[in-house]
Structures are given as C-alpha cells and as structure tokens.
Length: 257
Length: 262
View (cartoon, rainbow over the protein chains, first blue to last red):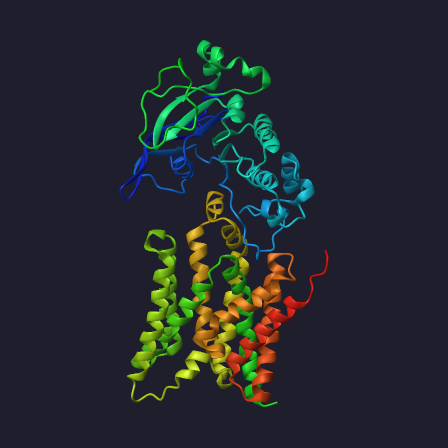
C-alpha cells in the first residue's frame, strides 16, 4: 500500500433538521486500496460518499482531497428519461473533457461492453448498465473510484464477475476505491478495510486479519481458499432500531472502538 | 399574400427555433411545470409594464427572470416542497396580472391577446427583437449543450466531473425566460408551454441523438406554425390556439404511424 493519501474525512458530522445523519465519521483512502462501507439502510453511507465528493457540505469536520485528484464516480442506480435518445457511446463520453472515440471504445472494452456502444442506454440490463457506469467513471483515468452500491440490479452470476472486474482494473489502473456495498461475501476478499456505518462508525477492521482469527476459522472454516471471505465481528453496543446487516456469530470475535 | 402574414411567419419561425432547442431539455428534465409557471408569470410583467407606462417587454423579461431564479432556488432546496410552491407562484402571478389589468382605466387592454397571443399583429420591431433573442438563445444553447446534457442525465455525476451545475441550470432557465417574452405574442401565456413540449415530444419518435431531436422539434414547430396560420386564415380561427391544435394533430398522426422495425 502506498503512503500517498488520496482523500480523507475527519470527524464528519451532519444532521438534516432533528435527524442525525452522520456523527464523528473519519476515514482515509489510499491508492490501490479498497475501503468498503457497509451498514443498514438509512445509515448515511451514500451521504458520506457525497460529503467526500463535495456534493454535500458537512456541518462538522474536515474534507480533504489530494490537490488535483481525479475522481471517478458511480452513483446509485438511476433511470434516464425514455424521451432522451442517448446511445451508450454518447453516455460514456459525456464528461466535460472531450474524449476521442478510441478512448471511449477502450474504456468500454475494459469493462466488456464494447458490443453495446450503439444501443440506447434505456435498453440495458441491470448488469450492463452498472458496467457502462463504470466505463464512464474510468474515462478520466481516475486515481480514486467512488462506487455507490455498484452491484445494484446485477444478477447473482454477474455480481462476482463485476467485483472481480473492479479489482482487476484496480491493478492495471492503480486507483483507490471507496465503495458502498451490500454484497459482503463477494467484496470482502478484495477489501483492505471495512467500515460498518450506522450514522457513526460502529466498527472497522481489516477482513484479512478477521479471517485469520482462530475464532473465525472455527466458526466458518477457511473460506479464503474459495476466493471468498466473510467479515464477521461483534459489536460492543447495540442499536434500538437496526443492527448492522452483518450476522452476529454465536461467540468469539474481537474488540471494536 | 399580405404583409402581416409574412411578418407573422418571420416572427413565428424565430419563436419555434427557440422553443425547439429549449423544449427538448424541458422534456428530458421533466420540467413542463416550469414552462407553465414562467409563462403565467409573464402576465404580471405585462400588467406592471402597462401600469408604469414603461416598456412591457422589459417588465415581462424582468418578472420572468426573477421567477426563474426563484424556481432555481426552490429546486436546489427540496425541503420547500417545490411543486406546490411553483403552482402557487405561477397561478398567483397569472391572477394578479389579470386583476391588475382590469384596474387600468386609460389603457384599452384586450386580455385575450395576452392569454392566447396575436401573431398577426406583430410589428417589424417585434420581429427584430424576436430574431435577436433567437440568435442569442441558439448561440448560448450550442455553447451550453454538452454540460447541460450531462447534468440532465445525472446532475451529481456531472458536478463531480466538473460541470458548474448551478450556473448552467440558471443560464438555461434565463433563456426560457427570454423566450417567453417574445413567444407570448405568438401563442399567449396560457398555451406557451405547448409550443415547448409538443413539437419536442413529436420529434422523439424520429430522433436517434439528442441533437437530431432538437432539430426535428424545430421542423415540427415550423410545420405547426405554417399549418396553424393556414387554418387561421382559412377558417378565421384564433392563430395561437390554431398553431397548438396543428402541433397536437402532428403529434397524434405521427404516433398512429406504426414504428418501422429497426
């Protein structure tokens, strides 16, 4: 892992009216490393991404980005109005800086959607659309990739392929990744740090360390050999309405802050 | 043909040029209500112009620009409950304008002219102003096309990529305010949105790119203008509503044609 910091959040706090959305959240993203945010609906995961991207001003705390940082963003799944005639090729190339046809085609090829370039964007399946969004994010050669639930609307067989693709491209492009994901079992194997967010950071840790933990191995066996890893942990506190989406093992685990 | 017909055609063509290029974005951004609120507010501008004895065009432009900026503010603060508030602004301005006009004893005001337009009465000065604005609108739209398209697809994605979303949105809304000022004379404040929406919606079926759709919207608008004026001259119907009837007819007819398998 490189020591160059790409972006950093320090003690971020945010409320909408009476409702606390984020409380004292800090995180750091480094090149070629993956930070994954997990947590229940309404935990402030997307909002935290927006704070980092400068789309949402925090009430407290500091947002820092490396000067001149190139960011690729894959927002949550969205619909394009059917009245807008737009091909995949036009969509991928719709960044402020004009890219040549060759560059757009290369990006499409990288994510495996080159055969869809002439299609209208509205005709794509969930899995195809997420790949097209990824191609758009890759167009500016990002140093930081921010992904908001990249697996949304992708079928089970496409899901692990998509995460493998993100991981494979990470090695060739060298970007750092900050993503929100519900597909824990699929992303954990390639994640460097997991943050469990429920308005504040419930716990954080390295899945590698967790998966080598004797208690973990006793409970789940060595699933790393299958290319999968499950992040399992205890909370040292509870929430009245929601817990984290991670299942709690019967015993063992480690201490969190 | 009489001179007034040529004058009407000239002014009308400039208006459909603007409405075609602006209207497609109104459709894509689902902002039809925005056109209504703005054009309804124009009547308040007319009333203020007549009351102060100053240039009506100037007042309409001013009121529409203010309302456009107000709407932009509302749009960026969703907590205000935008749809309701916009409905209140537009209709209040329309009602207030109408009431104010009846209080002007020295001015003979034909309300129908403002509500439904009177393209056959345009002056050479109107034509000059309309074409000048059309040139400005088209030039700015060509300049803003790419960022506007990007923010139409996804505003936050565009912002992250470096599009100055607020400024581009504001510029687009002010262009519509400019267009309302002159288009009012063609179809009136009540039917103005129809001129923005219907030709664009008709063009969708035949367009494969955003640019094609805008150009086709201009063509459809021009056809509706010609047809509407023809109808008005033949049957002695009001011109503005006739143009809109023609636009609607084109929309329906083109949707009856079965789509060719592509």
